Length: 208
Image (cartoon, rainbow, N blue to C red; front, side, top):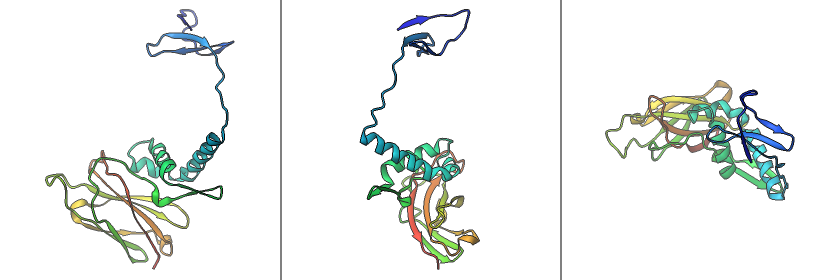
């Protein structure tokens, strides 16, 4: 490994013959021998890559949803990482995504106890939860839901459907979802949308 300073060519990077130019943490230019990355493609590695590709492909349509619920542009990365560990089932060599095991939000806010959801009409869902807080003087958080059509796997986010202290909320569904089963997740957030709770899968609600 050798250091170099070039006043003529400025910053140098990339491969140069048998060497590669990089910068260290101090911003110094370094030349080192190029070593071709090894890719043994073991069965375990191949299997993991297939799993990673499968999850990315299935969750790609949810990219905008994850950006909203995770509160950052890297939401899809967080969702994929969680799904890789918790939401993939393999049977007979085939991979299946368990949608009910997905995570849509992660944070330190208190998640309500005893959250229930009932399909009250073909076009509406009634959501209820315990309003008890572990810190009684906390500002009321917002209640947010993720809804997914079980047939099309299309998901939408409904933010601020109510405040935590309301204890209940009615959620209207898109008209084209009237005959579909609906998967529902809930998470809580601060009014200024800077913090959230973990999300929780509540139920798959059959059409009525």
